[in-house]
Image (cartoon, rainbow, N blue to C red; front, side, top):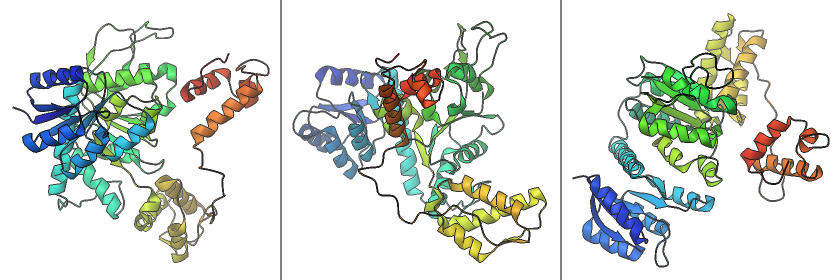
Length: 450
């Protein structure tokens, strides 16, 4: 018999269906509660191992209110809800659930989500019991001794030997691809390939052909059979960089790969089994993408089984000197220059800089300085000026996406709603009409413009 589960759901039919699903899968259902008050009593009486939790319940209290109480009790829980607006998702995220299922869902999806949740919970408990494994060996290419970086290294070591999907989150230049390669190299898949896919660089029309391949003659120009990235990586790892750029229709097919371990080539009638591990990366807030309808919530939770968050360089400044000397040795050797040191003044410059481009910016700076330095020591760096006081703005600062949306809307208003042709918004913005249409679709500006 698997764990005991309490269902907290105010719709009787939904709750009863859930009970039948869980019992069929071997779980023991300890009860059904329609309110927080009723749930508290059933928890005290029956001591469940897990709670399935709806957000909107009978009474004044919500599932989110109960979630905070469950965290105090160290009782793991998953949400089941049809409510996916951004404010709700932000409140949900703060309670740190082990999963979020969107109604309606398939029985298989529920069982898989519970398996994922149990795995995450067991991994966290394992990490709590073994907060210091004593294994402090360096992972090749990951440089630094700061506490935040060592936490990342520990997570890599914990997750690498498994087949668990990994989501690497961090700003541009923090080393997300390096983490993906480390996860692969420390796994049992290291003898097989790791295939890197930059989702942001794939033309939308070719994404599925690139990922899943195509049969000969499946579309104009498909003159030969093409093996996609997932088949190329069979037995190994697929690293999906900038996963937030993947369009919704391709997300559905990626979800199938994760769930069914199979793909279907474009133009093909047969499925192909693939054995791959997924590591994805993003510098976006996928929760926001989900709330705004650009990323599937079910895919987010399938990828987010084991998140690894990379700190920006400005939050690990104690690693800057180590990194600087590492890159100095690397590029001095590559360029055959006898440059062996960095002056104290130059190091002070590095420590006082904000590093908006993170490690990538530091690496490029050292490489450039090695080429320009005429002595055996880098005496100073040519860094951008640090702005001491930010420019005052009226109200909260807009995101680049919001600014782009406003700019496009202004162009559309100026052109009377006309997108292409003479005097159209595309001409005003000096971009191709098809590019503007793509941006409008992505930003949700797709009504009434021609």
